[in-house]
Length: 488
Image (cartoon, rainbow, N blue to C red; front, side, top):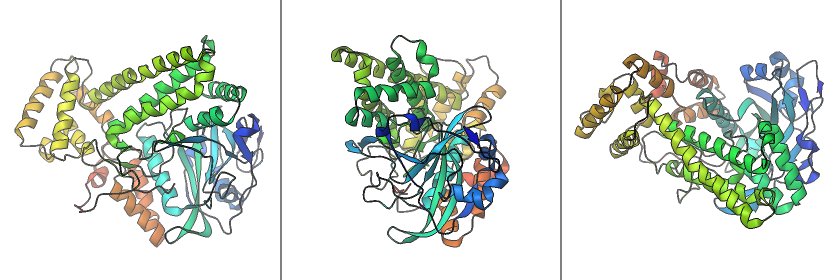
């Protein structure tokens, strides 16, 4: 590992030491006139990078893919995956992994340039990205981080000075993505389908060493790997559900081994509570609807378990039995964590058998009366029941009576319950109309102030400050459902 003096890059390249079948070494794809649009200074500092140096000509050249920083070994990763249920060979079609930054805290973080041009896995694509989707990923990923949800992070967005042709001509851009790793369920599917069992084992050992070193003590380390990934994914999807986040494209290549949220394409946050909420323009069957996310999580984990079968046991029947038993644990982890999270959103510290029915009764009322998910819980937090559309409904009054009785059966005070709710119910989320407003100003007018203000408000979602109220307002009524598109 080496460290450049002008920027603070401190690269290692452990992924590049895997068998060559897992990646292709690349040269960078030069762009004409890169310009830094936004830099995540707090993230840069935590990575050990010099903020000022990142903003000079050489620093921007690295973020644009025009310059290889010392110690980096650019490559594109190979992987496969089920996309809307159909298996296909994939890979980094427009992303280049520069290497792994070793931070001052001795953490290992992937540094990837997204939208950096063609790779051997681009198929018919141009390998480029446009400004709007890259800024969208920056906004949503940083909002998710502030909400306390494991996620890849966004270090910077630069424009390339080159147009990208989609339906129209759009400004090109590159996002620098930071991740615990880019190991996916699809990486293991690739290994199982296109590599040898020895290479699969090398990949599994690498994943264990990088993300789960403590499981080395287990007698069946590959079963332990499966169990740890199941646990992390169950916990992650619970956190999505608790804030109303809809990923939109839960393909197996968009599911990380580390348990981080990745690939912010057709994602969005739900306004009115409805389990059938879908935002993706291509998800016509609702495969990845809000209410389906827990089930798609376990489906994806089933594909991960299948990829590990050669390592779980030499007898295939026994391997399948081990995998099935591990997958069965997902439901218990998910339900336990979801109930715990929902109790916290209602200020409940203790456990009672009837809590699940109390929670579901509220959600059913929210769905029946088209209540906003985030604002309803915020109004409950501050006892501003008159603000919700549920106010005045007999069923809601009866529910409030049950809820208050439930709170009265625990030792914690009302003040303690309210603090738990404040810490569990965000004042703001990246509302879809606010995100679109910021992107339109940036892309069409070159005005980044709207986005910068939005990012400031989203940086501390549990603060419940007066300044956040403006960003909690709902969009104007529309005859058209909000749609997002696969563009990132």
